[in-house]
Length: 410
Image 1 (cartoon, one colour):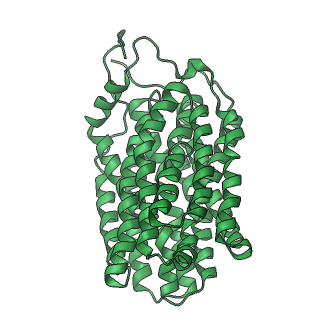
Image 2 (cartoon, one colour; image 1 turned 135 degrees about the vertical axis):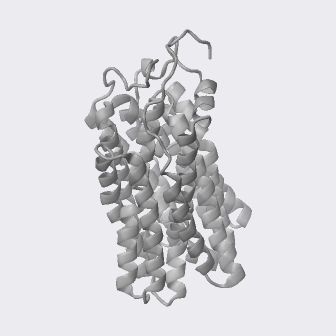
Image 3 (spheres, rainbow, N blue to C red; image 1 turned 120 degrees about the vertical axis):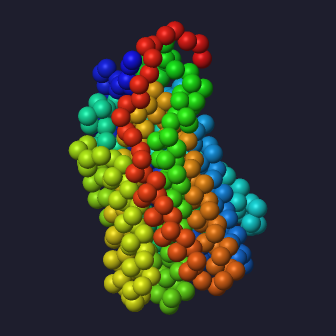
């Protein structure tokens, strides 16, 4: 019987992988984190309902999820570099067309489909495949935590930048500026360009079909997908609709911008911390605790008097729990199945996350328009958090046992 293992020796230097991964995630995750700031100015100027904007971002999340496994397969087969280049180009184009869209359909095509596909090729699934192949197993969870923390820092850094751009040059020109910034992903991807041997199939290795059959037939993989569904529902609902929720309660846009920035700031600590803890503690308990604490934080936020202080406390706590699920989830996948198809399997788990994101952002707009408030969606998020905390309990992260390698055809 054999177990999945990491690469015998790193192909790229650890410093190079971490710096380039960090900067790519800073841009790709940072830009999208501030999209909620555009809800008010775009819907007011275009005379659209909130559901129109929310549906476009819902499509963005589902497009990201659907394209994720494909981007992962391509990255595992041909290398992350090519996928990142295409993703950077699509990201820039999507932001420009988002600014030029004058109908709900066009906005859904640009902000939804194009940017969603771009995010599939420039975020965690693709980048983590490179990390998995180039970082020793005993440091993998830590390295993933570092990369996730960089994406979180991008969220903290980019929100005030985006808010300032909207205030100073208008929401359309702000999107043009972000489109130019997204092109920086292309030269950064050169630092993640692996030798062809790193992604070439070797005799005796699993085929893609065998890897998928193995993963989807393994209970722990499906439980991870269930938990990640909840993660997507919660964070995207809050990230997109929190600014409008606070505005409805009479709070100014500066409070919302500060809250989103605090989420990004504390997310740096949370993602790095979960990566470090994942080196020493069972990752399923880390994940279960994160989901349970999210529900507790939302309940306390809803029950407490709404003040600037309570908003900032909630944002800080949620920031600690925001993307802290990412390093342990991907580290568990690598531990169970190995790193050969890490980008692809991570893409499928992330597809579940994005189905949750689609429902979270869309239902936020739909139920707001139907009821005039966000209360129902808040309580759905609480119930789902409890479910996810329980769903991670049966996860087993020991390496899966496989028969001795045999020569197989793809």
